[in-house]
Image 1 (cartoon, helix red, strand yellow):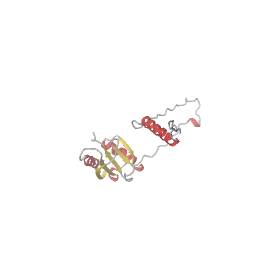
Image 2 (cartoon, rainbow, N blue to C red):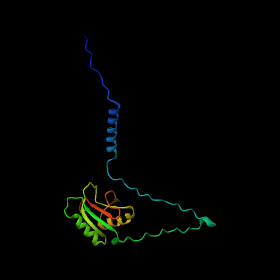
Image 3 (cartoon, rainbow, N blue to C red):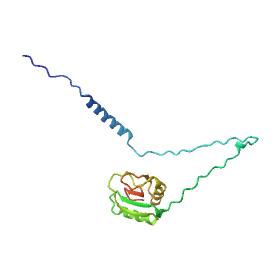
Image 4 (spheres, rainbow, N blue to C red):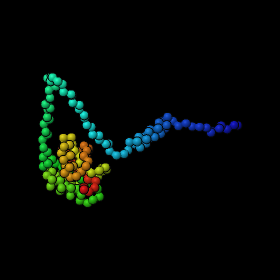
Length: 165
């Protein structure tokens, strides 16, 4: 009686092969996209003035530029602010909340924040973006960003990752 030879090459199933390829592509994408925050580019426009002609035409007359109405001034006392500490510094949220209150902001709470925040940030709902930039300026915070869940959308949220300068 002759025994069968059980040696040979076994190819992985297509599912295993696709999984390996997907993991490799995810690793490449992760390495390629990690890094700092996106940089902003300043775009300036350059206009060329037309050379004056000997006979002025009605279309060559200077047009009055329509001025956009200035947005209303931000009233600090009407904007709610919450301050959270995401650092190991005890009492930091309370100290910064006091500073914001002295600057005229309506601080409605301070507490600890649990989660990962890349840098001290003022988070804002869309309608309070200008107020967020003013609060960041008042407190010396460089970063602002749109609010995300679980942040409330009727106020500014300050999350501190370290002492302010």
